[in-house]
Image (cartoon, rainbow, N blue to C red; front, side, top):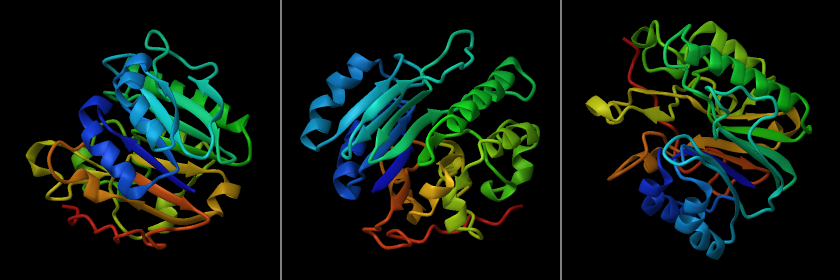
Length: 273
């Protein structure tokens, strides 16, 4: 089973890239974030295109902001939109959807950004991650949390740690909140010594200079992590005209159609300054 997470930064803008990519990589489960479409608009845009490709889907959107979805060709059962006990800002936002796909509980999540350390939005982020922890703890043994986590787990997940000083995404409290989920970071386990990124700012040629961050994660329970054959970032999807600022993260369970390294070895970053 091939599972993908991708922050598309507007599914309406990215549909001309998303649909051919589905045909090329043929994922079984796709977790999308920042869809930025209400559910009826998501259906009008993609419903027929997904159906002809064999996908069921569960969307949880709110129009201009946020929005998550799960696409599945291996079943879509017990769909839950939102998190039990989740905080709001001030009201709960469309940031989580979960379903059982191919026997695995899959969560597509878009964690709040946090904006500025110690701000109200930062504390909202920590409270949201705490609610996610409770949901995961109450869930089944086979589970994946996939999405834009908006936290770089270690300094190795940054092109230059000094460049992010005094910013969110790297504070000890954020990293501790992700670690507290008690899940395994399957991409880092597969590439323990590589500087592998999933996000590059649109500005200043960041992608072409490989000045990125790894904030899009696939986090797994132990039993599901033991099934991982390949885990990689599809950097090619970040190239060309009109890309998202995030690349898809691909995890293959039990079988790896492109080989256990994926179709390419993720290149290292430029050296940290």
